[in-house]
Image (cartoon, rainbow, N blue to C red; front, side, top):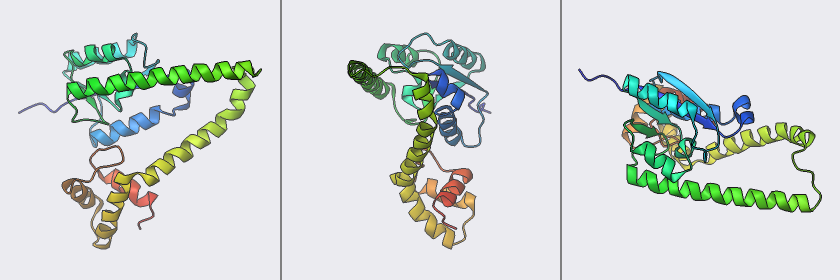
Length: 226
């Protein structure tokens, strides 16, 4: 009998503050949880490092465990693993299988192209950020003021939560699934039957994953379908 695939989860945030707050980490963990459904990773590694940096001690540990256990590395999104083309290329050519929840069917060629685009976007962001900071400094704005940052921190968290909710509410995958769920609820389907029906008919979650009982329940609660 063939052994069931085991997974090692790898999560990455760019700053220590993101790591402490949980913002970003929880989102990645939720994406991986939805993709694996009832499976639980054998281990989870969290890296606090820029996507452009090649030194990743936690990633090395995760890959080492994958080799030892014969497991597959699972990452929420491609840019959580790397924004550097050459770095990602080396990983894709390694002896460890890697699954990206946001694009599980992608082959290596497609992933190389996406990583190139991701690196280009990261470089653009860096240039824009540097230009914006230089412009502020030229206007006499004091950069890196701790009091100013703390004043904005709670508001930034609220804005992030509101933005995530709006994206979820307006997600086209969610809207299509909700239309089907309204009918299934009227016909008194169970949560499992609803999930099975959505998957069979080709519906996917907002993250492009299959439905489970928990994701169906969350949609029903979010859109007040009952």
